[in-house]
Length: 461
Image (cartoon, rainbow, N blue to C red):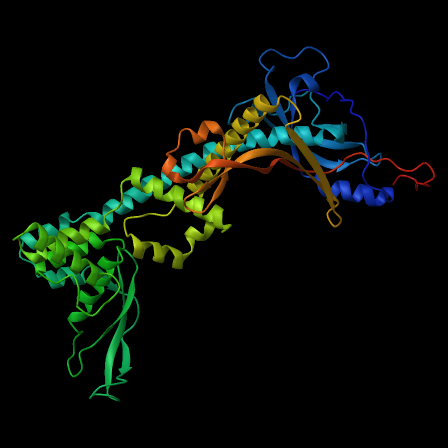
């Protein structure tokens, strides 16, 4: 590790006023604790040791000095090779100093950004490994819930399908008294107990048959149909049991999906002329509708979901909402909404393509008008509470806008327009309109200040 950092010379500018005490407190609040990376060429006063030409050393800011332009930083005994994705330990040697007392805070934004870039690479590698592990665990769980070999073995041994079905559930509470609320036996006492499905966790209350010291036998079959209808975990095992017991897929009372499937079965059997057993036909069709979509098909739906959220200005996390997921499952049980990392990657691809499209539009306008084809606006504002400044750069140019048949009006380059089908456009003739696009957004804090000459500064703390 190097002994001391060379000072970089930067022009000083000012944005804040106030006493030195207020400024020092604001700077400490903003910068203390930040981690930075310092290049070997900025640290060594002499020749850089062999093998350390591309090494970046990690420091932490301890405090801001009273001169308001320098800081005390401490070495974290870690380093990383420039462009790599792994930090490594790099302890102090006997001749090294672990602290620098005159680090120029004018360099903190650049050095902190360098740390963030490399930390992002490290985190991406870690998150990718976690995502791979999560997918493997999920695949194992799915394989366990979809495995029906033990059920087939029990059925071949002659076990009662009803008893096998009971094995797919477990009690999750004590047996308690239940007062019947309606019917001819209203006011009489029976028994009930909470149960749940082993694989999906779906809970239900199982009642005793009145005047009998046993549970009602029809309840497990009703719950099994609900598990299949909603494509819960372990529904394939339930389907295998119901098929073996020759139980109908619907009890004839629900109106939110099974009746539609029965109509499809009737149409399929009547039109094609299938003479097979209706129950086996229904089972195959139901499992087909509830099976997971292929990745190629489901990816298109996931991209459409992110596009819909962006277009409607919804939070991307809406796909994690329980009610929204239930709604999607009712529409298509085979669809799986995009998970968090996938939503971010899809959004990044959309942003990259939007920037590419903007580049094509700007290039076409430049070739047509040569000059004076684009203007830019820079806006700055300050948060008075955090004393933090923000800046945004927006480009403004006249571009071609097309009306689409779906009601949208889109800015588009000629290059993209020529690749699309003319049937997508309600009007193939574009109109010229003003296109504004935020090219960059920055949040920064000034680290150097200028005071009016007639301002009497108090002495340094």
